[in-house]
Image (tube, rainbow, N blue to C red; front, side):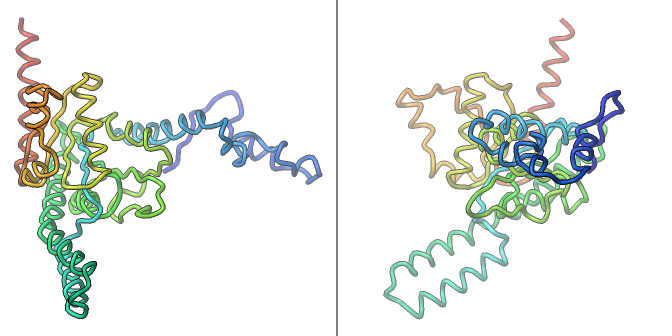
Length: 305
């Protein structure tokens, strides 16, 4: 995508950059101190420039998404470790072969147990893909719905959601983060809407700035972090209420005992009403649609008074 600034009476930064590169090289002009500040990577990476980098990381995705007219998104989180069924089956076969070769190896026995559990969870890959497809098919070319799928751009559940949008030739967004692993964005994120972040905090802001719903599939620390951040912001009224859907009730009730938190007085009974459970893509999409239909009716009723 080409971001062309509107015509202005002053030279653009690009114009000045071209001019700065003209002329003969001298000991002075080749010095880093002589380079324009915005071209000097070493300068931009100084600790003192962290506030500037934070601002740049906030503004770049904001400007690009605005140019694409993206105003409303559905955030889909979930584990990077849940692949599609065929891959999970192959991994289970490998784990079984390894365990048979070394029947007394406890580590291989553990890997076999996990491979069986992951295969059982591969159904969530299919549901995430179907949900991405359902939402994108309903909204990509609709005048009444402008929801765009946004994920963390990784493999597993995130790949599945982006893939669902890709299945119907709809755009989708990926917000990657620089990590020692899982760094490459999946192949189904729209090329011009694939972003990379250094700061987790700014990445989280971009997940929620346009969010109209959040769907959390089974996942680990990252999924839990993003889920509880959203629940906290809704609970404390830092953001307006939006549908929060926990996909797979059995998994989530095994991970978090919300009723225990209520009984211990750590949260209010009404805090549990912030989220809903879903087991199928259709059910999750229905919860999102029902939420905004009720909101529209309430707004219409209040307007009549």
